[in-house]
View (cartoon, rainbow, N blue to C red):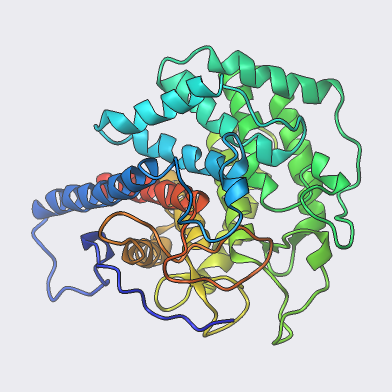
Length: 389
């Protein structure tokens, strides 16, 4: 595992180090400062989003798995468009909304080719956003038809990941790996919110609880990436909890809470899990603001921006929703500062672990679309947080 080396990327204003002022500004100055901070966050989001939109036709800058990156309705691009939707919802610049709508129309608002695989569901989250917020009503029935197909013949496979398995393993017809909790359940919950039909949320809720019973460690309050990692130990004897794998599940938990009705009988369980994970997550943040690729790897573990983006997103959501109190605010500020430092002057995001399933080496210039998606999600909640102060 390489030790972290500080990136030479220019510091964005949003990444200014947290300091204690000698005196508080006048009360009337505080709203103006909050607006200025929010504007800086939005500017950073727009720069990163614009860079990625300009680099969607040639993925030569992606170090590994370029073929997967090229899949137009796969999870890599899907995670980016989920984040882009949140930028489009906040930016007055129409190009972000236009890019998302153009993508959806080009793909016929369809999901990926595999009926059951969660990775092929995630882009539907962006399509439902377009249906509700960009006048693309035709998207909803296309997505709904896929979910109905799953419900007509729900998978009954085990959730155990076969030894030496891969995302093509039999269990992947269900949500048997932590990443899947971001990819699929929020789409199902949103479908219930938009249509009023409870069957979609009921399916997502049951499957979430099933996979959590297997992969969520009740002592550590973190997810194993899949069943192969249960009982494994790292070089220091620590349990192996992958940063992005937990980031996926934590961000998926946020999305579920955004869609769940306030009076839903399962909501207290999701809120309790969110608070548990939040308490653990803030303990594992590095001094530079990043979360390491291996969450329990200890000091010196390589930092990484996709996991950091998801954790910052979730913590900021907790503050905005009232599920977390102000004591979590410093972790959000450090996380956003770290993310902003990883952005090059041209808007390219660095320090993104490449496609994988476990902690791995990260280089300063490593980037990927799902990392940008995580950055935009984090920015959306940090922006909202700063605007309401």
